[in-house]
Amino acid sequence: MNKLSLIILFSIIIIVQTHGQTLNFEIFKQGNKIGEVTAQKIIDGKNTNYNILSNISFHLISKYHVEFMIEAVYLEDVLDRSEVKDMINGKVKDNSITTKIKNGYQYSNLKDKNCITASDINYSISKLYFHPPKEMKSVYSEKSGVFLPIEKINDHEYLVILPNGNKNYYTFNTDGICTKLVSKNGIKSFEMRLLNITH
Image (cartoon, rainbow, N blue to C red):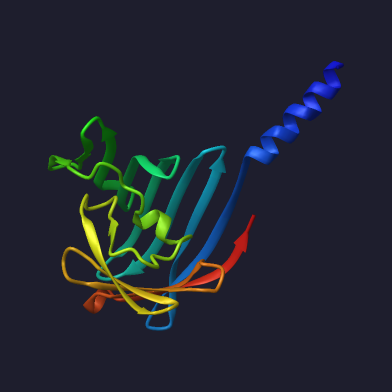
């Protein structure tokens, strides 16, 4: 086999093993667009990476720009590591990391560090954008380091209750993709709508 054939074969193998999907959302508050969210799922062989990036801009007394990022790595459908960054006007306000260890997981943020006794985490917030909960009763929060309860509203809508009691309603299409998120959080309430999907 000549060099060109090897290059072509190697390229085909990479294409077959690595593929992804990107969901693009718009964020609205009281009918006004305030930001965007990009959710990306990348499959590389037996491993899957989930990346969520949101950008929100709004005015109170002054202008605020909020960036929120989740990166989660699943090895053979088990969470191996995740990192969450919360930034306001370019300054890091929180940085949460979850890492799989021998007897469970270690979670840390800028203030705390603790161990999570769960042997395997198979479902987390970043994964929720691409896979509806169905029979799941809880979802791991990469940001908070805790499992959040899930309630089924109907076949296409699920409620996730946050640690502070606020409620997020997720709606899914027939392909299992999240198309809408309604966050009920008092004056911080917002709605996120799917704009398009790219592959």
